[in-house]
Amino acid sequence: IIFGIAKDAGGNIILGLDGGGLIKFDGANFSSIPIPANKPLLRRIQCLYTDSKGDLLIGTELNGLWRYHKNSFTPVEGGKNLSIDGISEDADGTVWIATPFGCFYVGKGNKLFRAEGATAFAFSVLPVGRDSVFIGTHDGLALVVSKRVVKDFRVDAVNKLAVICLVKYGRDL
Image (cartoon, rainbow, N blue to C red; front, side, top):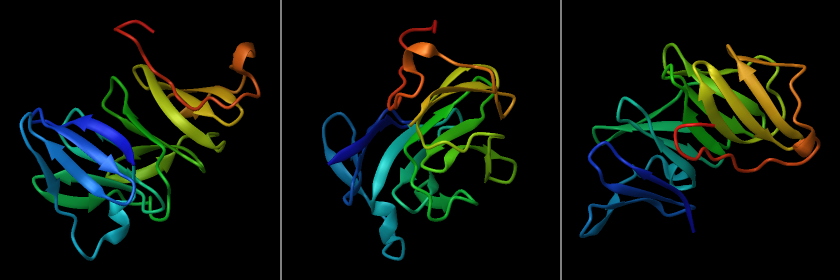
């Protein structure tokens, strides 16, 4: 099952498979991206994202967030045993992730930090400006500004509903 699709810095299409690792399509041929034998859980891919630095970010099932850069896999610290359901990046270059344990961001030292107050099961994350993201949760839509959940923010149309997928169309929200 293909769970994630991203275009890497070289323009290749990368497919992330649940249990099957990573497949690269260069426009003509498919090839496997080798995953080290000592990292078998890295084969359980939930989502992919290429950040503004050109690194491929890999969200796994129960093995956290990984960076793939220059043919090397590096774990993002603080994500061990986390399932990553969504990855995105805001206009400031902060990478955000959605997990069953809330919304986190990658901070200094390639470490994960939880956005303050963002403890609800998060399915997806969508940047909406500098240091601001919407989080799709099991209980509606949340807004994070300056790495804190805005407590009085509420969208009645989706309040108490699971918001699984958030998509931005075009440049405007």
